[in-house]
Length: 429
Image 1 (cartoon, rainbow, N blue to C red):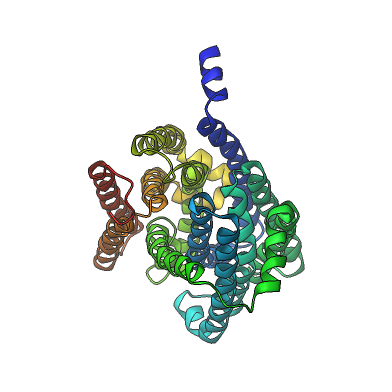
Image 2 (cartoon, rainbow, N blue to C red):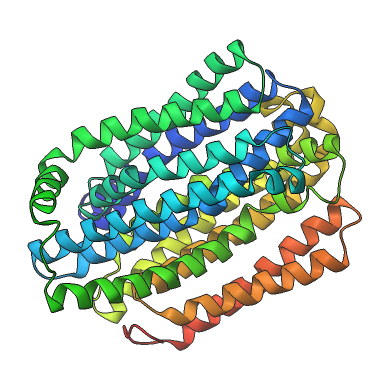
């Protein structure tokens, strides 16, 4: 035992993993408390609609996650404090403009999305756009803290959001019992989180913002423009990878909506939300990996970090998936209530799929950290296989799960084969 404690004490990687895991575990607990609480406040059909709206937010929010990874990569690899800070702020400005355009587009096409997703009104679509927009400054601050390995503060911000969305959603649902109330709770919670992040990054980010405001209209130098162009290209690659990964792990509640009735969709959405515990509890491992794998490391060191991360993920995620497989009815009843027990038979399979999704996420992010653009290929192939399978077979929930399992399994094999073949730190594979 003393040897284990000493190894942890002398390993920055393990210490960061433990700190971030503990924080992420608390976040996961509060995130998944949200579902049993809300499932008892609204009917099954409305719960399915809330899940679809949240899933829609997650799909569009991929762009923000990609932006966050770019921020981390710039901060950990770019030489020159002034250069990296200016690039981050210029990219944030571009993201704010792009997300404002997205909000306008979502507002214009809200009736079409309302009909496609079988929503009761256009407001959930519009509120998703609002939520994405206010996430831009929160994303910048979160990933600046993460790049500086201030992981405890990143965890606290996540806990504020997780607790805040429960409390605020309860308040709004008490006022008006509908989907808009739940999403309004999300928005208020995000604003509270942003206030905390603003306070915690004052010493880093506020100085940069004042400098940026003063110099915002001056002509950028060629070197800065070159860096920005490279980072935008890198950002598009990350977007493609992360969007594909999101389709492989979180789009099922959206893509299932054209094929099943409202009650079945509500049941499936609830079970799917339980299975995602496997993914989100292990997400902290990828969060530590992305700030630990750098061009300054030797290839062997980076591979050792990946190996340790994979072992931790399989051990942790596999334990949770096994628990769900052994007692699906118990966990369904505890987390969602008796109304969802009829869907408990799907939990073991979905938990297994989520474990594969977690590995896909880890292995893709490892390649993203080293700027290997070819990581997008296995993800695109997996999504394509999943889509074809879903189009051909979608008459039962089991066929839906099978399509997701097949797509994720193929991506997993291809990502692993890329990593095994690649032996250097070059950025373009």
